[in-house]
Image 1 (cartoon, one colour):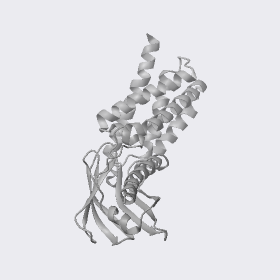
Image 2: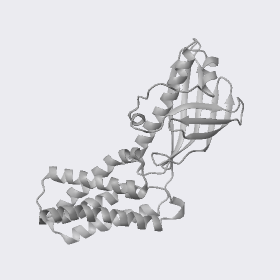
Image 3: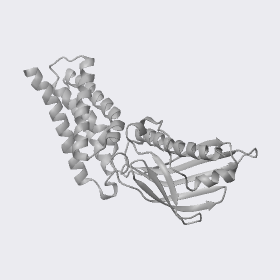
Image 4: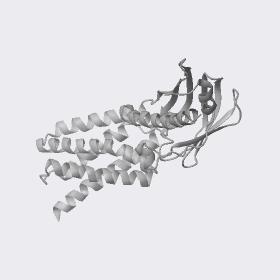
Length: 302
């Protein structure tokens, strides 16, 4: 019974710590980073969660495998609390889960080492360092933008490709990208009010969400650039990333083929960048490829 109580306390107090700290952080966070999910929420807090759990489990002599599984169960609880209290969607939770598990597990192993040595000065120094990093992160500015570019050769002249770039018919092809298959919205159609500079354009996704856009560059058979003027808020992805601008470039290869280049600019609101930008690039690239493959299919049909 004592073992079960210790195991349960390790889970309960670790997750209680996370809920309290995140709530306090959101209350005192500077206005200019409200809505941003900072590095420390995904790195420092899970590390300390693991350390807290290890303190309760310090006398249980858990094996490395048991610690890894305990870190996994701790992650499941953290994900459940994120869904309940932060309103995160399934896709977001899938994306964040590996990072949380790694950090909680690292904290659990670090805690085992700390409490085996029973060095209070060392333990205090480690926790003080983590607290210092957390406070510095909370007070820091967070601004990250990036661009993704993809190219595809289409066996059709530039004029034919252009006719499907500004607006295109509905995509009925089955999704190949695994995140689209598990529920992430995918692009299905683009409409436009007119073929001229300043015209309004819409990009429609599979769940009915619509991105409102405005054509900012309109060079027939050469370049189409559109700024995103409004995008829906959705717990699955939107709110963590803003798509700022999209662009299609067409290059006549001189042999009745066209190189189509798709560019997108986005801004992230989740950190650390080194982890989440991998996902952002992959998602943006697969949006590009789905649209560009559809344009290729329409253009080559004739």
